[in-house]
Length: 544
Image 1 (cartoon, rainbow, N blue to C red):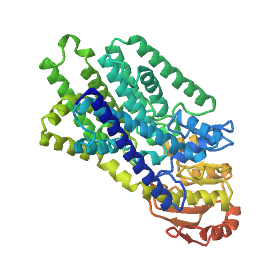
Image 2 (image 1 turned 60 degrees about the vertical axis):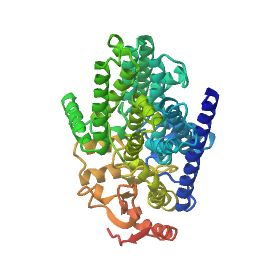
Image 3 (image 1 turned 180 degrees about the vertical axis):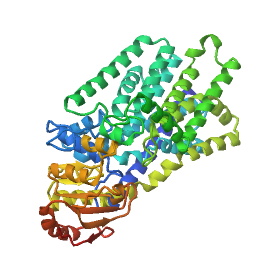
Image 4 (image 1 turned 45 degrees about the vertical axis):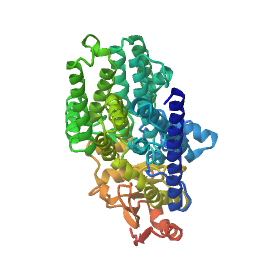
């Protein structure tokens, strides 16, 4: 096969794969909208936190309420991107548009790399093995399920893949796409899109030092430090912690403003997080990948495959080292799951880095028509993509789950009982809602977060906090509060729906103020007549 013919087959392969991805994406989004009665609803409630922050950024504030500052967003950059979308009128479509673009670029990067580095030059675009592998590689980066989460993880995956691809370019001394400028931008943006991005960007800076690119490493390092410091100073200036409340509420490692904070406890938290990783499916896979990568580097060095006088700058040592450091950092400080999104960037690093390290072995197996080797490759990918395949299937139902619970709570809070409200699952209720929303879980309330972290979230404290914010009613998961529900609160209704990604399918409505006790029943009457058929609202007589 000539170079021209090979290039033509490459273009056809990529075009067909991207069309397959686009068609499946349209199908998934369409099914999600159909199941949600014609509404575009994301599969998680979390993107509506970002959208609420973005909404208030356009008004000159920062947080989920127009009247006070808060820091509930898990990303430095993402709310700013969404704020631009709000400004130009894209509104809640912005996350989907950003994620589809990011996912499409990610699919292109990983499949183009697979074709150029793994498949033999003689591979036709119609090759069954190549096309099956393409589908599995799309699933391996959650290219179908992740966009509908509405979160910043699709951007994080794109940045991770661009970083590894660019690092390979630098390590090999070539200037093939993606160009180093995109690589530099990706390394800088990593920590700004997700704080976990510090792991890959930090490992990349170490790799640049080994490659002798110390000026570039210093420039990127100083730029990242300056941007994060600027963000930290901004947060401190508005009375918030340097890290967002969402990071400190959900992370077992990063804790601020609690009686348990301190270097000793933080180190212990890192050890505990690593131990917890060993009980997670992905944690075990990461550990296996770390061990295999380490052994392959040692084996190649001992056999002379890596020249001993330049081991530290050899491409496979560089990529293998970054892979090891990134996965290890996630095991020590990262989280897993919640609709299979927290670890997906690390999985992407593992997949692309692994393809590079094994590229010659896979290429040889394909050339020699080694059926067992092909079967092993496909089988390994199948094993890896199971969670993301299941998430893809569940996506339309997850959208419906958010529609039937959180979107209905939003409707009640903005259309039927427009008063200050307390919640424990912040998101839809705060977006496009001009009333005050008190987040009892602490993502949108630093005071609530600190009270929870210090074990002082007793019923009287909850009631005092709610009344101090002039909250009239609450919509909360009862099993999240156990013994923390104040006796002064009156249960007035229960909403039941099917939970897919929501933490609970049961939401309790409580009247807190006398105004709510008197007026909520009529609002609930009107609200109940507009609920989807699958949602049940049970009423209770509230007397104080």
